[in-house]
Image (cartoon, rainbow, N blue to C red):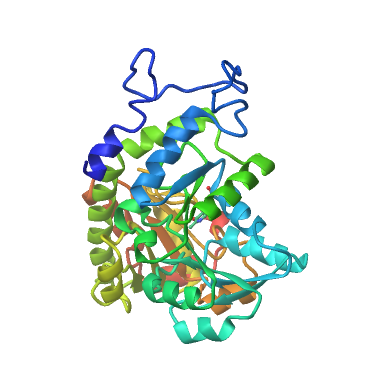
Length: 393
Ligand SMILES: Cc1ncc(COP(=O)(O)O)c(C=O)c1O
């Protein structure tokens, strides 16, 4: 069955009694023991609505199993919690700010060691490997600079040192990139983003290639109590059913916006892997089946970036990505504010950078919104406006 058909039918066979087409929400903490063959006893350990979501996520990514969490950060914490004290992790240097914050915190507490590396540079990754390295932690495309790392060759490198490759695939979803097929061991998602897609639930997921990883992470999920709640699982299932058509529209809009912005005089640079000028465009064509709908732009100054944020009417100024509505934000002070200044600088994340999560609205409205926001004002007026703080205007 084609993946899109499977998605439309997610959870259909769960209700054996009344054959409901939609998955029931098993809103219960406990289950009766019955004849002793009930696989469920307590919803922290497992719940049928969560299982329906997990089975679909495992199928989509081609994993041996999946775990659904109450947030993307819970999924990340669970993987990091499976490493022995003193383990070393190599992480993409422009990763999600919350991932950088957690790794930095754990390093300060001497629980793990971390090296933030430009994972596009395989020689630099190899040079950072230590005897204690447990994982290479990849975000590709990276956040917010949309850099592409080579999953297949990093998987080979990791495995030659007996290290796991973990890929945060939140930006593309399993429809546009399948890291397990390229050699990754664990794929992780903030399902808050495209997988749910409606900005109305916080969730996370892990998909494993290896049964032993799945078993260990499943034990930890139960021990930490971080599994997804039944209602949240149901919301994510509902989102999953329309993932293919949402992704198609997201991407069509993102490509059109990237092309519009690429030719705009107020924009110094557009970071979008779908543009032929993107340094890793070829690699993106090879390992992805689409370019996604997040892009970032560099403007002339921080003031110009702030002006754009103040001017938009359709884009909402908000963190996050992957919902049907378009969002715009300033990574240095919003999504990536939890990174230290040094981490931001070494990742190349400047004050003039703006990140866009392109939604499914009418493309002409989105272009018109950015066009009026980027409108070139008379030079003197621009200077005056740039001298005024964001909140005074
Ligand atoms: C790439 C990426 N990974 C992980 C997370 C964390 O997920 P959550 O916010 O669902 O905890 C985020 C959140 O923005 C993200 O963008």
